[in-house]
Image (cartoon, rainbow, N blue to C red; front, side, top):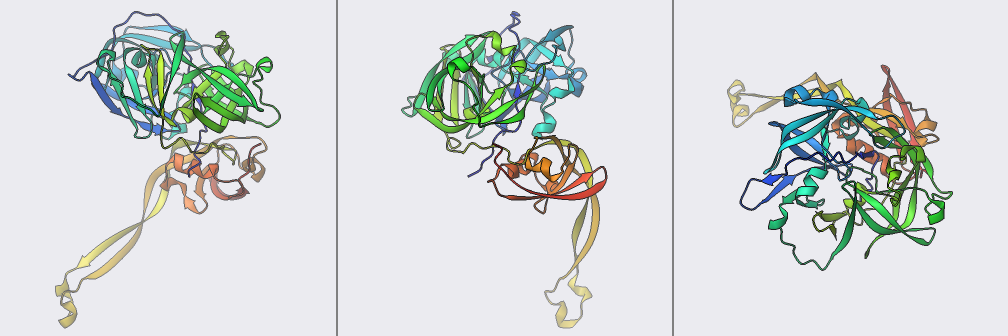
Length: 446
């Protein structure tokens, strides 16, 4: 069974700006449209067309308005106009970030279309998801979709279905659980139960499909929400207002009515990083992708409900990166590869009986230079096996356990670090033009 879990987290919490706009409508008789998505690090990446240009967007229940990462220079291509400068605030202990607000844009998702859409373009290079996902992501979208449709998310088959509420018909489902939603600043919250040190604690969590972690909890001694002595400190990800750090650990049980997840991953973010989130005093944390993906989900904002049905991911074990390495795509590098070309000579060039039904195979082995992805170390956890072995931020991993990394996706390479404790990892890296070898064993981080 794969033990693939998150290693990056992106949480964007924007204010409800309250701008009056139109709604999405579906341009077909069924009033329903199906969209295929990619599931990368527990995050849903969907195609979104803006002003006639198709881009890749993260689907995030925690974001109020569509955001474009404008450092990608897409604003000119999209013909974004009618802009004004505003400041947005979110997770992280930094300052508000500057953004351009653009009005009257046209959005299309499958057969769903919306006119006069506001878009926010942000230039902060730290909000570039592409290197960490190994896949281009141009922006984030959320509340506009969930407000207008009943949204089915089929994590197991990688598709999204948007249906206009008046056209939707629920199917009977004995194996489903339906939970009520509550809203604060147009964002969905759910009441569930966690068990920490054998104590059952009711908690209110933001449903955050834009976070790849499983569960975030805000420490509160009076409620019994605390990390205890079994944890490790880690980088949790980038928020809209800067980096987020905190503790990682496990909880005994996460209960969503009858659905029970044992030994679930949990992160306890530092208070300085979540001051903005704590404005909602009743909020105790977030429920994110590594839990949500274990269900096929129906989100119905009109009825304020979420329906869950277990899928093939449900029994996937929770685990952590046992190397301490976080990788990101870092451009490309030239790789020398063998180019085997098979040449055939006509049988007429051979003599007598040897020429009958004979074909001479000549393998002309040559080398070619190809551009391949480079995977660089961007974070190393303190006191981790990788740090103790001498690896450094900026090292480019060339081979892992004698396999060339450029032959695999970023996610396939990272998957090796989530294997069982005790597994031997051998790395060959490029450090400023010098090839070095390192070796260590995976260790449980706490």
